[in-house]
Length: 285
Image (cartoon, rainbow, N blue to C red; front, top):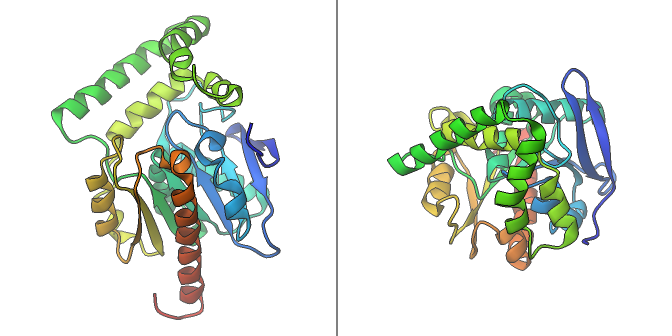
């Protein structure tokens, strides 16, 4: 098991109870909030990054709704609610502004953080993510199928859902994983996971992404077979002034190629913070 930072449950008033990891970082350090990808958890997505980021930042990582120990709710999953959860968590922790660091699905949440809570966002770091996830007929069919399955899951008893998810997904995917990682996957609420996948298929920020007016860094996986590299590049081109870091890796490079990915992510965060400080001081980007 990796050396994970302290974790705890946090009640978000009117929203539910979630689970976070937190590292204090240097005194007075700015905050990065880590937003994980679909079907992952904060730990599965960022366990390789915690310590390196904490050398420079206060680090907060949240499990999203339905993922790991994130909020459980009968309400349909919405990416916008995940962004609002992150803002509510910042309120509970007394954090005025922070840098959302979004990986894959977490990148959509980070984008929505700027759109819905712009005054809280010092800058953005977007990794292995895109402005949209479905454009071809095949992709639209796949996400439409997820929408139908998630609807059926709402009327399927939870014990049956758990049995199906274990037989069809968890036991296969995690058979070679370490026990701590397999346990995190097994803790998902699969109705919300399916709804999250359907929400990704509907996400498209291209109409407003060009209005982002805070510093942005984009970390691109050059051999990504989950989120096309071309889409990661396109997103970076749409965002005014976005700077890019390129990693020779697939979608799992955050841990499979951590020796390259982690330093790039740290530098991307530092670059955003430097530019944010300059802007606040009246300088130029």
